[in-house]
Amino acid sequence: MNIKWKKWRQILWWLYVIITAGYLSIFAGTLVLSGTLDSVDNAVSDTIYQWINYNRNESIIKLVMIDDYTVEKLGKYESWSRSKTAEFIEALNGVPKDAPNVIGLDLLYYGERDSRGDTMLEEVCKKYDNICIGTPAIVQEKDHITHGHETAAGTVEAMDDVLEITDHITVSDVLLPYQALLPYTITGVTNIAKYSIDGYVRNAIANITVNGEEMDSFPVAIYKMYRDSIGESYSLPKLDVDHSFGFNYSKKSTDYVVYSFYDVLTGEVPASTFRNSIVLVGDYIKGEKTYKVPNQRKIEMVEIEVQANILEALMTQKTGQNVSKKFLSVYYGLFAGAFFVIISFSGGLRTIIKAFLLLAFQMAGCCVLNKLGYYVPLLIPIIFVIGITILNLIANYIRTRREKAALEGVFRKYVDKQIVNEIVKEGGIEAKIGGVRKDIAVLFVDLRGFTTLSESLEPEQVVDILNHYLSLVADAVAKNEGTLDKFIGDAAMAVFNSPADLEDYIFRAVCTAWDIRDSANKLDEKYKEKYDQSVTFGIGVHCGEAVIGNIGCASRMDYTAIGDVVNTASRLEGIAGSGQILISSEVRERVKDRISTVSTGEVSLKGKKETVSVYELEGIFREEKETGRKTIFGWRSV
Image (cartoon, rainbow, N blue to C red):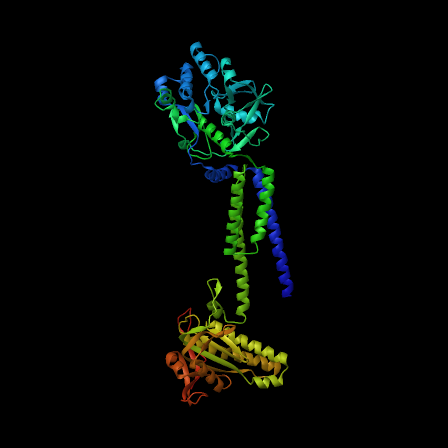
C-alpha cells in the first residue's frame, strides 16, 4: 500500500511540474506578445544596455551650437544672412591641415534669402567638398502637410507611420537647400528619429524614398562622407522593413564638448580644435525640439545630440535590430517552462544558486547579442527567474513541512512527542551523543502475571491485552505531561522533568501512578469477563539526579535517562505487589503534604548496598481547577 502511494505521489508530482511548466510557458509567451511590460522592460533593458555601450573616450564628433550667446550677438538664425554660414565654413576650412573631415549643418537653407549671402555660401560650398546639409522631409497626412523643423514632434510620429501605413501617410517631398547649393553639397534627411511605444527614441530611419529616388538620412550621409574622406569603405546596418535600425547611445548630453557658433566664427575657438573631426552644427536655444532618450531619462536630448549619437553608433557599429516578438514569445515561453522543471527537483540554497547562474548566463548572453546588434528585452527573464524561484522555494517549503510533519507523526508512534520535539529543532534533526545532569522523577510499571497470561491465552489475545495496557499507561503519562521513555516488553518507563522542564514534576509522577491504578481496575474487570484472566500492575516511583540525553553510538542511540534514580525506580516496581504503588522516601518527603502513604519498612534492593525506606501510596490530594478546592482521591483508612 505504501509503495503504491509513493508511486502515486511521484506521478502527481510530475503532473504538477509538467502542468505548471506548461502554464508558465503559455503565460510568458502571452506576456511578451501582449506588450504589457514593454515600457518597464525598456527601462530596465536600457539601463543595462546603455551602461555597457557607454563610451567614456573623447569623440571625434564636435558640436557647434547656435546658443543663447550666439543669438545675443547675431540675432535669431532666421534673420541671418547666409554669409554668416559662409564665414563659419571658411573659418573651419581656411587652413587645410586643420580642416575637419565633415561639416554637418542641421539648419534650414530652403529657398533664397539675400543674394549676396546666398552667393557667398554657394562659393564656399563650391570651394570645399566636406559640407553636408540637413533637410527635413515634408509629410502629408490626410491633406495636411507638415515639415520637420516647424512641427518636429508630428513629423517624427509621421515618419514612423510613413513607412508602415503608407495608404494614410506619405512623404510628399523634402525641403532641399536652395538650388545653387545642390551641386556642391550632400544632403540628408534630419527628421528620422523613430519613437518606441514608450515615447523614447531607440531607432532611426536610414533612408527614405522621395519621388522614386532614395535619400539618406543626415547621420548616414555624414557617415558615408567621413569614411570616404579617410579612404575607407562603409557598411550600413541591416534594416527593418521600414528602413529603420536600432542604435545604442554612446554619449550623454554632458559628454559632448559643445562650442558656441559665435566663438568659432570670431576665432575665439581656434580652427585647429576641429582637425580630423566631424563638426555638427545645430540649434541649442531654449524651446527647441528635444527627445526622450534611454541613456538619460531625467533630461531630454536636443536633436543635434541625438543625430550625434546615431552617427556615433554607425561609426562604432553599435547599431542593431529588435528581435521579433514572435520569436521572443516562443523563446521566453520555453525558457520559463524549462527553468521551472530544472529547479523543481532542488530546494533551498541550490535553487537560489541555479537561479543566479541561469540569470547571469541569460543576461550575459543578451549583452553579447546586443553587442552583435540585437536588442533583446531583459525584464521578462528576470521576472520569471525570480518569480519561479520564489514559487519553487514556497512549494518546497510546504512540501518539506508536510514531509517533516508526516515523519514526526510516524516518529511519535515510536518515541514520545517531547523527545521528538527535543530532537527536531529549528528545521533540522539534532542527534548527538551526550547528555546533561538533571533532577527528575522516574516511574516504572509492569504487568503482573504476564508469563501466566502468555501460557493461558492465544498470542493474539495476549497482544490485545498488552496493547490496551500500554495505551492506558501512555494516556496516563501524557495526561500528567510526562515523557514515555520506553516500553520494555510488558513493562514501561516514564520520566518527568525531561527533556523539557516541568513544574511539580514529582507530584505529577505520583499522580500518573495513581491514574494507572485507577484505570487498571476497569481493565481488570474487562478482561476477567472477556478472557477470564486478571490484569494487574505493580508500580515504582523514585526521584533524583540523572543524565538525560542521547545514549548509544553514532549509528544507534536512545534518548533516555541514566543513573541510580532509574535503577531504584525499577527495583521498587520489581518488589511491588499486584495493584501496589511503591515510592521512595525522597518522593514522599517532597510531596508528603499532598499524599497519604504507609511505610513498608526498610527494604534491601538488588544492586544497592544500603537499605531503602519504602512507602506504599494510598491516596493523593488534587486541586480542582474550576473551584480551587482540594479533593482527596483514593483515600483509604490506614
